[in-house]
Amino acid sequence: KGFWFQSSFVRAHKIFGSEVTYISGITDFRYYQQLHPRHILALQFYNQYGRGDIPFQLLGRLGGANRMRGYYMGRYRDRNYTMLQAEYRFQIYARLGGVVFFGVGEVAPTINDYYVKYVRTAGGCGLRFKVRKERNINIRLDFGMYDLRFREDTYGVYFSIMEAF
Figure 1 (cartoon, rainbow, N blue to C red):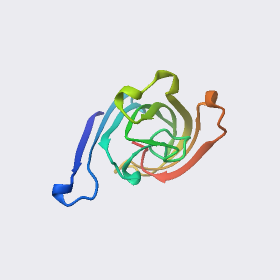
Figure 2 (figure 1 turned 60 degrees about the horizontal axis):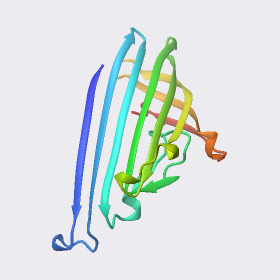
Figure 3 (figure 1 turned 120 degrees about the horizontal axis):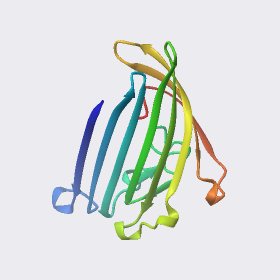
Figure 4 (figure 1 turned 30 degrees about the vertical axis):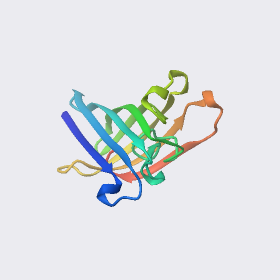
């Protein structure tokens, strides 16, 4: 239960010894609400913004095991990336839990280039096994699919330790 916030900012310029000039920043805001003793709603807003000659490896990457599950990481890349996702977590039996998730996001070269008709969606479900009760550590298995409006046939299966966010 509660909030979590993280922000970072990078400025690369030739006067600092860089070969390229760019500005990039990340904002990650999360909110967790207990709805019932064994039911939690988790929300995440993630934004990556940038201008200039951002190296390919540092561009915003839509997809992956933690954001927009269903798209492989980096399926879409650009200077700006905005994503909102929700996850409903619940206990099934003893140490076994479940999750249902849904996300919307998009990448664009500039903030003015975001278009609602190109917003991507992803959703899915998963299982959790609580390894350590006192530390709330889970092993997770998630199955994510993305928006079929764009006629792209892909999905993702993710096996990991800890929650996606």
